[in-house]
Image (cartoon, rainbow, N blue to C red; front, side, top):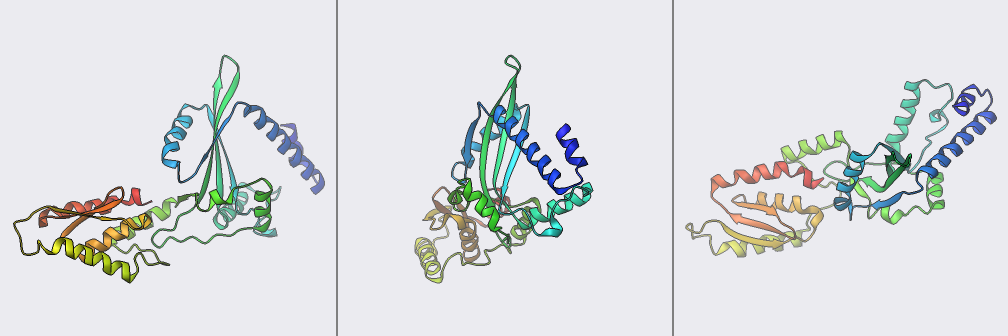
Length: 283
């Protein structure tokens, strides 16, 4: 508390910097003491579904949690630097500008649980590699700062886990936007084709051959056909394109294939419901 009070009373930049360094050192010492028995788990898109239930349990059972972040940058310019005399609204606005220009590339979460018998804390730490998700019209542009990259490199930050293995995310406003695009059928990938013309033609030919022989046999109902999934990232769009081209088919994805069923007209209502509710799996 005395260090914090001293930093508030500083009337020179030198004294302010000294106070900030002292406060940072005290904080790091406390964190090191508390994390003596910590277990750290790295979380990427590959193991997220497995680890996430453990994260939820750790938070639920904890006494308190601490969150730390690494960003692709921190400072936008002199006008955006924090000042000792900033009001809370001014400080928040500066932080908000940084947060919208830079992105978090790593989020650390530590769940502390008090041991009353030993009068100490045990801690479970999770390190999440995260990056923005490109979906529909959402294709975020963000800024990287050279000094921040140098800092991350200096502390052995794994950029391979950040980019290829980073957990994709979108914010709440973007979720609402994607839901609207799903609802009106306008969702697409803006900078790449889902299927090139050759693959699309082969796909249509495969479906025509499988269903063509039953075209003049109306007594055949609920005929099932599966086709392999070529690009798992774009399953939703493949199903959507099949549905557009073949409106009498009910199509939905399985683990490694797309199942198509030739159903009666009144049964296809379920497909529309399924496509509307598929946003959670898509994101």
